[in-house]
Image (cartoon, rainbow, N blue to C red; front, side, top):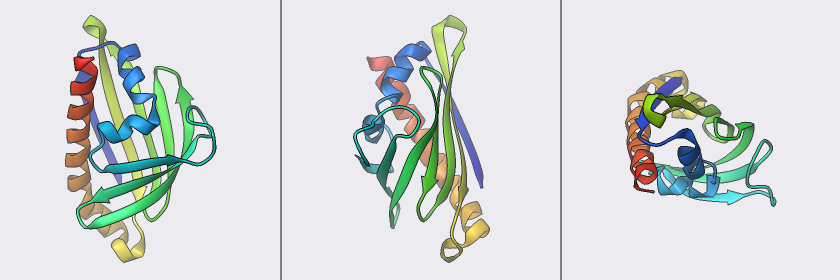
Amino acid sequence: MKIRVAITIDAPPADTWRTVEPIERHVDWMVEADAIRFIGAQTRGVGTTFDCVTKVGPFHLTDRMTVTEWEHGRLMGIEHRGVVAGRGRFTLRRRRGGRTQFTWNERLTFPWWMGGPVGGLAAKPVLRGIWRRNLRRLKAIVEAA
C-alpha cells in the first residue's frame, strides 16, 4: 500500500529541517507516535535505529525503524521493521517566496492477520487522514518558531 501526503509550509527548508531533523521530537507533531527510543548512541543520519511506539485506534505497535537515507536539509528515508513493514521518506523542496514543500511518502505491508493487502487498503484512508493532520501540526510548529 502506498500513501503520499504533502503540505506547503510558510518557512524555508532550513527552518523546516530544524524541526524534522531531531527524530526524538517527531512525537511533537506525529499524533500516532507515542514514544521514540534510540538503539545505541546515534540519533542522526543513515544507520540511526530506534523503536517507535505507535498507537492508531485500538492498535498499539512498536516498530523498529532505521534511517536509510539522509540528505541534510532535504531528505530523510526510514525503513520500518515490525508488524507493519515498509519504507517511508520525507522530502523538503524550496518553493517560491522561501516556502517549503514537505512531502511524506510511505509504502507499507500489512501482515496476514491484519488483512494483508486488504487490511492495507482499509487502513489507507485512516492513515492518510492521520498523516495530513500530522503535517498540519508540523506546519504550525515550524511557522510559529
